[in-house]
Image (cartoon, rainbow, N blue to C red; front, side):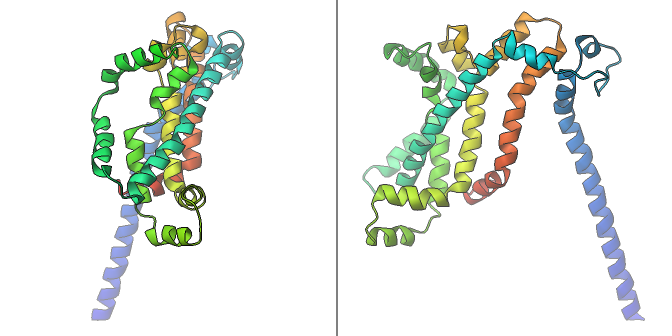
Length: 285
């Protein structure tokens, strides 16, 4: 009798656990749908004719989908130029990944005089708002004749204290014995870094690729300050300019917003697994 009662209790516990799992899944699904709804609305609105985008009550699915607004962005409104400028800024930012990885490796695996104080200074830069450094940065770049250039737009974000910190945290987990064995085999420091450290640092590199891409792709205030020529504007500045020029054309504005958002979402989806692994191994929650 007691065995039968125990079996019923276990069955009841499993049934309760399944119901709880289903309930949690339903709540998460509803939350995901609510979170994704503005993104879906943006995409569907970008495919609507203008008259349909301002109809009331609004419709979610376009009745007569069209790609007219995307074509207009790149044929009439210079968004091809803005896209090219943004890609160049992002590409220059990726060059800084190598420098930050080198710095993180040095802080993690080399013992040199002043290492702690230098790392403290790197961390201290994270506490300074970027708005405080804009004026001196502008004066420096103006003295170097780099204002109103794509290099001047990308240069201030080439390296960052937070990225160096992430690289240092991750590379501290690489076994020192492996590096010592490579040195005993005659490998130079640059070869060790390039052929051992970097391949083992793929998760944190993926994190930095995503962060660098987002920072360069979404850059708005600094390009607006340093670029006086409209041909040097980035996508975010071009989108702001579009919103000022066109008062009522939600479809065109949503098409421009889609051009801004979709690449970021794609990059995150591609590197998602490595991003989660990189943050976990870096000791960040």
